[in-house]
Amino acid sequence: MFESISFFRIMKIGFVNFWRNFWLSLAATIVMTVTLVIFSTLLLVFVLTNYSIHTIQNTVDVSVYFKIGLAEDQIVKIKDDISQDPRIKEVDYVSAAQAFDSFKAAHQGDPLITESLNELTENPLPATLHIKTYNLGDYPAIAQNLESDQYKNSIDKVNFEDNRLVIDRLNKILKFIVTFGLVLVAVFVFIAILVIFNTITLTIYNRKEEVEIMRLVGATNWYIRGPFLTESVLYSIFSTIITGLLFIPVFYKVLPKVIAYVNPQVNIYANSLFHFGYLVLILFVLALLLSVVSTMFAIRKYLKI
Amino acid sequence: MIKFENVIKTYNNSRALDGINLQIHHGEFISLVGLSGAGKSTLLKLIIGEEQIDGGKILIDDIDISQVKKSDLPYLRRKIGMVFQDIKLLPKRTAFENVAFAMEVCGHHSEKIQSEVPKILDLVGLLHKRDSFPEEMSGGEKQRVAIARALSHRPVLLLADEPTGNLDEVNAGEVLDLLLKINQLGTTVILATHASDLVNKIKKRVVTIEEGKITMQQEKGRYQL
Image (cartoon, rainbow over all chains, first blue to last red; front, side, top):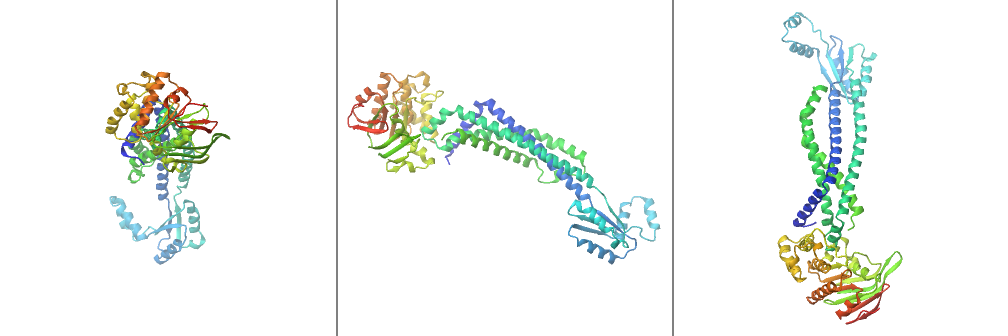
């Protein structure tokens, strides 16, 4: 598009414009920063809530307790039978012997229990199936199905920990956050676009003479537009830096505490995508998009080339 | 060098230029005369591609300028220098910087700018004013800086649109002498003016425009309407 010397000059004019209209530039940067702060808060809350829901969802299952002494081939038959259901993700079979062994292992340190277990002539623990579905909503139907007459002779008890209420509540919160957050982000995106549009328009107006002369002496269109784009890229860079600095303590100090308080099992930091660098990258891309788009609008409308 | 073939330009249904046929040769000095609003400025604007023609053809060195892409117009403009009645210097820059600005914009290297600008300022006789700001110079001096700026790309053609319009007789004379000198050095000059005494001094080709039409062409002519 242009030689390096022109590129350097364009950047220089852009920088000079940024400093000459310092207060305007500051206003544009602040509005952009506020937008980015709101956006990143929303993003973090969304990711966290979503991740928590996911973790809790994984703990839900239906447990089927078979009658004691039921033959293994019958259990396997029922297991195969259940596995046919397309709604079911996985069926985990724990035999009576396995249950007994793991119970024993879990209470190894307790002499009283170990002793009582040794007294037993027969395994008191039933064989169990742990069933997980793809959809949370399918659990009640599946539990009900297992309680039907068909299995009455083999199954002693069907149990599932109903976390659905918690999950439902979390889902509602998530939905609210997304709706409310998106509206808020949209409003601020609009404000940011307007402010940057006006700032660039004012810069164009201030430099009207210069632009006219540039055109006259044969400056290329990109040479004329370049400084305005440089200026808007500067808004994006500065607002990303400010937002990034604000979020370092949030990300590394506040957030771990919040997570530990809300749900200690969730270790979102283990997820490689949950990285501060990615957050900054997303913010910069967003900022760049906003400022370049509004600058192009201003250029199209007011910069006669 | 420049050929107008039946050129038509209309603004809001009124014809600013109506069937202009004109041929300008390399190294010529042409005075384009006529009253204000006769179409002189429009004609110059068409040459630098600032306005588009509505009919006919303008050829510059056999290139049809209506066919020149918008993105290539800047390169056309670098071949053509232009000066105006309102001079258009940047007030916060010195004479040197004003000329240098034009070269910077077109991607010349700093070393070249540093060596060329003094030469051009010397040509227009203003090397001693290189560090003066426009407000510290007379109208004639300012216009000479503007001419220096127009010359910075070593154009083959210089268009002057009422360059003496705001100047007194002495200053106007200085500017005219400079334009003649530039023409002697080989640059084609087109001077649009309605200053009759100036034109009478030049004794070169005069083209008269009235209401968008060429009404008279004289070699070594005088200002006549």
